[in-house]
Image (tube, rainbow, N blue to C red; front, side, top):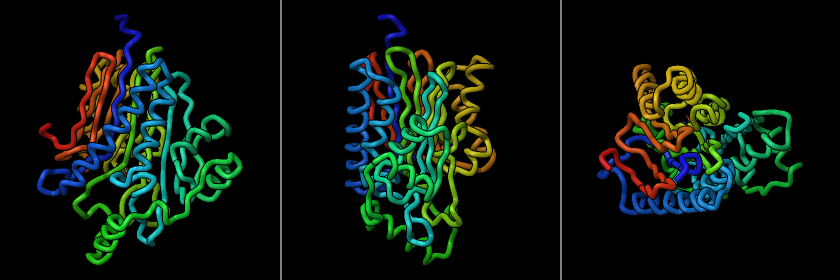
Length: 309
Ligand code: ASP
């Protein structure tokens, strides 16, 4: 098969203290089922010759609707009991990008990010303005209650009761993301999140920041991140991986491992998923586990949760 006809897809549902003894059977099997569904939806698009951009959006939309993950429905609560969602999407063909931060009423933040990319002259919209744009575009809305789950409320209550900060607790990041290479050789990335439990003051993480939590460039890589966002922002993880591949000639795995080592060295934790220009489909993480899955035209089909899988 012509190498340029290969497609590949990698998705994640967050990284963190994801170990067998910490997850209930339902959390384990529910997350795997969600990943399997999202992988199937995204790979069907790529197999049929569809765009990487459509595949990553579709896969992330599935995970946004799944309460096992910290994005859309089932997102983490901010300290004031609200839910503020961030998302981004990027097209490696043109490096067009769209992202949103602090979303409270649009059902699919990644869908809104795509609309920002395609129907506005801007890259990043936030808060009320982003919601106004969503209404103007006729996108589906959701009541705040629709995003809420009792498990995420419990996590916030526990954090407030212990009087600790978002990063002091045993973190299980649950951000979702997808990266793909389509049969035409184009790359795309998308990420969606509720951020971190107990966040304050309008905090925005790495996920909606192009070049940090989300990045795609046909010349090098598509990257979606999960983890302690502040570190990913400071390093510019998505762009840094791309730059190493493009300018140092490293392969995606070596570049991703090197940049995750930098995250760790600064004190951050988390993981990345990457697709490369030749269909490479890889991940790298510093945490005990990461919800992840990948599929390629070559027949790879893998769903994994723990580090030793
Ligand atoms: N990276 C996200 C943030 O800092 C959190 C996550 O990955 O779950 O907002």
